Length: 114
Length: 289
Image 1 (cartoon, chains in turn orange, red):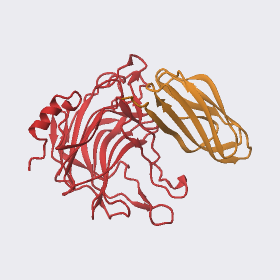
Image 2 (tube, rainbow over the protein chains, first blue to last red; image 1 turned 90 degrees about the vertical axis):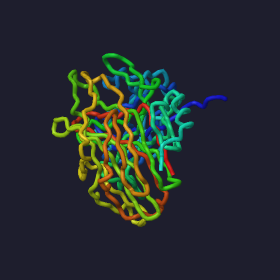
Image 3 (cartoon, rainbow over the protein chains, first blue to last red; image 1 turned 60 degrees about the horizontal axis):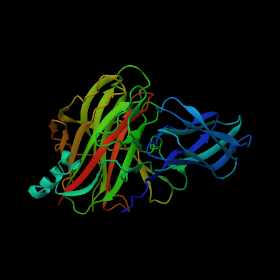
Image 4 (cartoon, chains in turn brown, cyan; image 1 turned 90 degrees about the horizontal axis):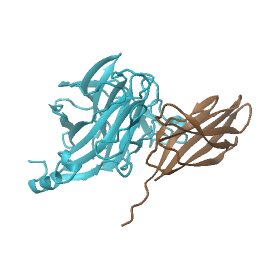
């Protein structure tokens, strides 16, 4: 009998405002072979409506982080954006720096599959 | 009544790698060693209605994850049985709590037993043993019978104010209930607050914290609860056995739409501005009619 591939969706940010320098909490995922980060904008606030740029980050220990190279642009309006990642080792997080005056309220999902 | 598994079942369990470590009651309801998945444990959050803004402060927990226990100094340790364990992680903020839930309903109001092999550690951001970082961890049942509603909770208070405590406790004080939204169908209680606990008599226990912030040892825990008497009847942790039956867990009025509820929940709390972790190598939940 074939074994189904494990999959798991982690809500790594819920109803959170992306302001200033931000990063999601570290998530262990060495078991997974592929991942997507989804960013769903619930509301765009702040004085300036600007795109927020997010960076996928990897880590050998969950404490020290490096940019993986892939980025995600999140438009300042309700909707969903995503970025695919593979070959990421044992840890993932999404990080960024919101432009001054920008405030996006978001849900961020990490969708993992073995 | 002998509620332990009959002899032939016990022989089968003894012959099964993984299960032979446990002492379940007559009927296994679930068993997982997290070797091939998250085992049906999900992130827990406070109730809401209409908007997520209605979630009570302190009830916005983080998702559980599968960990192979990789440390910065020694690499991957794996779990007790295989490579992966379920990991609960707080935020790096003193007082932060995280919980993970598996949602069931009961079939009979008999005894249930929740067993696990667990480990606790804080994030290894310092090069000293930080054994007082984890404030507490524990288990609870979220349950409602035909006419009773309880959240019976067993907690190990590891440390407080920078000092080791090592006390097993039962929550006895009634947390405040908050109406959520306007429908009358939703309410929430901040029952993870670190108050309202009563010490189990004689239940002060030292755990193996090892010597480095990166070295963790697995421990055994079993809590037996009587769904008819609505009391914990026994707590076991490694070689220590405690009697919590004289302590009544706090009770609430019955809520709508919850008859049959029997959630099994694990939680961990941090004492400092550092992530606290509860690792579960395996969990076994069993029942006796």
